[in-house]
Image (cartoon, rainbow, N blue to C red; front, side, top):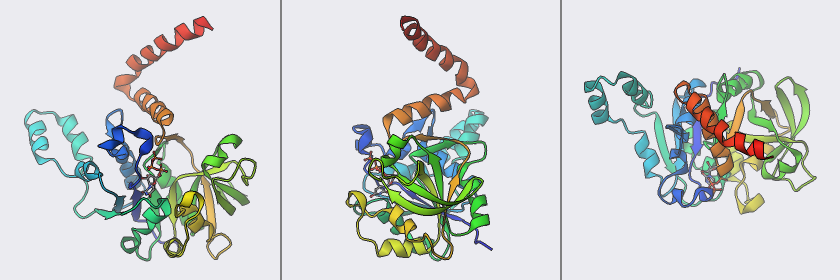
Amino acid sequence: MTRKVTKAIFPVAGLGTRFLPATKSIPKEIMTLVDRPLIQYAIDEARAAGIEEFIFVTSRGKGALEDYFDHAPQLQTALAEANKTKLLETLKATNMDDGAIAYIRQHKALGLGHAVWCARRLVGDEPFAVILTDDVIAAEKPCLQQMVEAHAETGGSVVAAMEVAPERTSAYGVLGIKKENGQIFEVSEMVEKPPAGEAPSNLAVIGRYILTPSIMQNLGSLKPGAGGEIQLTDAIAAEIGGEEGVHGFRFQGQRFDCGNKAGYLQATVAFGLARDELRDELMQYLEGMVAPRQAAE
Ligand code: UTP
């Protein structure tokens, strides 16, 4: 029987240069989709999947992220006194249990793999999840929950996989397929950012992982890979063909890459349209923008 996954690592120590100048003073993870920071979407997804311990790998300048998780008793009292019950509920839903969050520093941005490795002592000898907050996934059943269920079937490591256009594979870790079983497939190889024409498939890994503790050992002995960084992909790839192996999981849902500007804007529109109180006004605005362009074409 596989062990329950109760710990998740959130690597948030990157520099977020694609959002400069905003990220000079605001951690990327605090940027909002409508009114909720990216980190809140990730936390909610992790909670739905049964995660109880939330490990943030942070860096200099991420103070606002740590503050975000502080309880806000004065604000709560003010909202209660003003009978703003709905807002009060919204605020309380962001409160985390005492001791549920841990912060670890990554002293130098040596790559995602290194960031994950920084949390090794907190993870110990258990399977763990990794969530990249840049990847926001709109899904009926939260993506990590889908993956935890898949992991209970497969054991070993499970990575979220998504089909991308062949010309986009060089921007991702890409999976080779050994054996298919519905949404789950056994992985035959895993290559980080393969050069054009050399990708084993068009199935790209996106920012959700369930990993075995052996990945931490692999990370500890890795030399820098693609881009001079310690690559998580390389540590996972080392498990392929091993006892437990690596599985890809075709999740159900729509993924937005909020680490780049176009993806972030698309997510803002999609999550805005998903809100009852915003849909009509936003739709009217979008139609008003698109219609004259279509007429001109
Ligand atoms: P990205 O490649 O998106 O880098 O990292 P970034 O620094 O966040 O953003 P840009 O490219 O400069 O705009 C993917 C994830 O890995 C984390 C990032 O915080 C992000 O969640 N990361 C990356 C680390 O925690 N440490 C690193 O050394 C590198």
